Length: 101
Image (tube, helix red, strand yellow):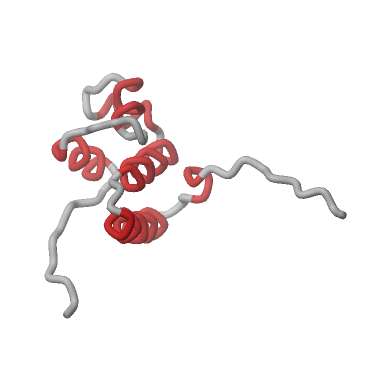
């Protein structure tokens, strides 16, 4: 029997373009809603922020880097305002639209 080799995989390593960011967030929002678990979204935003440079984002937002890491982890509980500021820093905005029937 062949030995199964598992390597560390990090979503942050896969996010290269704004389209990657948007696609990831759209998929994760759907998953978070289906699973009734907002941790998926927080972790994905954290991964995206890491892919773009968490330290720089923290400086741009005048936040402590370690606090931002914790806020965007599964153990975090950031305010909506913090999430909106991070997304804005990533060049995104929060927009609502009616769901399909």
